[in-house]
Length: 477
Image (cartoon, rainbow, N blue to C red; front, top):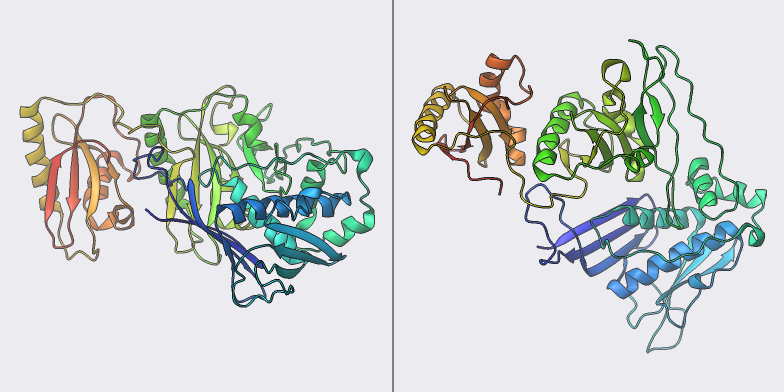
């Protein structure tokens, strides 16, 4: 299967195309596939009609040169990794304070880029970038390194510039700030290079009925790191009904507690996260790029923290319900050494919510809880469920693809749980009788599933032609 990954900024876009290694690829529907074999890389720069293209060697050289030059630019200390034309396909040269020359040594120059060399065998491509374009390219590379499902084995080997070699002046910092990177991004990059001492982070003091501010921090960033907020809720000493959660570093929390990795538990928590976020997401338009976050979730489904993965997510968090969904210590026991699950959540530009485990599933998940396995009983419950759903399903379907659900019933045939299995089933669930049936019993469409008694599980398919299929459950595909 061909896989594409896109990392977009206003002045630069990286587009990677490749395949999954079938020996490592997970065979699970909800996991974001891993791009482990790079076939083609394209770098689009504002002001140029044609992209820079190449294979893995070109892309690896590009990210090394970009990160090395960014380190050099911020530290004013020469970095040979940015100018190694003998062994690298890509190098950078500083033209002046606001111009940076990107040079690509390749055998074929794409149309739209003029070679400034008379050597017909290997004409280099030379492109002048301003500082805004440079930092957009740097951040696109940052987004790539933050994506654990794309070339996960590729990493940078850059050494920090020690303070005794640093020559950065206040004038340079003032020059870099307007270059579309922001004060906080520059501070994080400077910390990574040991240019300035890290600020002392003090947790804000909570005040009643007042939203607390978030602390921005990056743990072990790459040399071209940019700031993204890492937000987590932590208990206050004496919570009250009006107390808001204090903000804490999510990654620091994850480093001190166990991680939930059991596939079956992750599957159940995946549903709880979706059921919390989906109805609360009301602002589903107004942004140009997908908003991607990393979530920390407790074993009971409480969202204990989130981190923006891309720049758009950093800027658009107010358009998501995440800040309001962080657990409140006043309403729940404090998070101490509880295990935490991690999820990837995407608020897409077309209004579709995507939730999946951050690391995927290690193996096929199973339904949690005791099961009714007697074939005679399940056969009778199969027919009873079919009759109940068939009688309740009327009207003309507007969907054009099969809606697939897992539906569980107790020994009396009463619906105890249901779960969409494909995206179209999420989108059109209101055209099925399942939410009404569930609501009539539990008073909510998203009530916690009944796991206190054995259940029989079935796959229910609503077809666009009005046909209904109910078959015994055989597990997740």
